[in-house]
Each structure stands twice: as structure tokens, then as C-alpha cells.
Image (cartoon, rainbow, N blue to C red; front, side):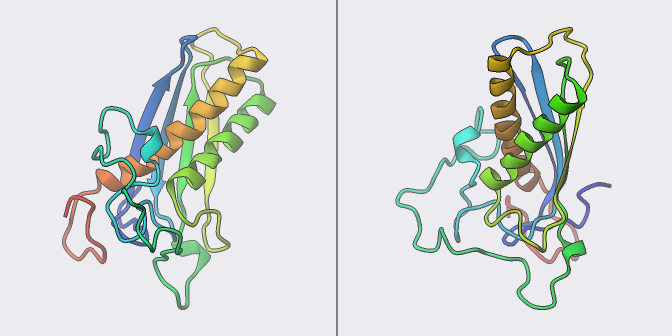
Length: 184
């Protein structure tokens, strides 16, 4: 299992997924194994950084804390000593049913990678081995126009952020866990 043993700085990580259907009927979906050096939650709270993108209380419906805690901007890290880049890998796939060229699929992966920075703080550190793969099935038969591709990229980022939060939110406690699950 992908996500087994995964951690974030504050809670147990795991496997998360989310999807979005755009107004033009194109679907984008994300699947991610969340094992980040940073935290998916804000400061010492249970509120998710990805809160602005949440749909239907899919990860608790807490929104942002009000007021923001004093420690919100302080990076929270899993380990501060003897950390290895191989110990922190958040790996994901972003998929769409749109018809995309190879270059457009690469651009979709780049946009989806931005979802990491919307859901994890800090993100893209030298000790994170983050990676996003992209694929396009073409099943919708729709090749997005430029303005549609802008919406697709934005949806890729927000859908990835949601999938990351869901990976932490849905993690289940197990024996010998070194971090609590979010539900605990």
C-alpha cells in the first residue's frame, strides 16, 4: 500500500483522492500518497491549509481558524535532525479525460504540483522528494481551448490540494503509529 506508514509534521499521512468536473464537462482527478516533511494543518490547529478548496465538508469543514494562530507561519517539520530526502516523498498523479498533447500534460502536472504548496507548509523543500505524474485519457473527446486550459490548470491545483488534505483527514490509526491520525 501506497500511503502506508506515511506521515506529515503533525499528523499521520496517507492516500487521498479528489475530483472536479469543470463547467465544460471535462473531469480532472488527483490521487496522492501524502508523506511530506511539512504539515497539512495550520500551526497547532486541526484546520487544513487547503480549506479554501474544500467541497461539502470533505475534510472536516473547519475552514480557516479565526483568528489565525500565532504559530501559523512557523514551519512545522517531521524531523529536524538527520533528515533524509528519501524519508519525505509526496507522490501523485493528476488525470483528466481531456484530449491533451504531451506538452499540455506536462503543463497539467506543473499546475497540479502547485496544489502541494496550497495544502502543505512548507512545501517543495530540499528534503521532499515530491513528484506529480500527469495523464490524459482523451475519453471526453474535448481538447481544451486556451481559456479552458487555464481553468483545467486551476482545477488541477485545487483538486490536488483537496486530495492531500483528504489523505491526512482519512488516515486511520494503526498500532505503532509515530503520529496521531487527524481523527484522533
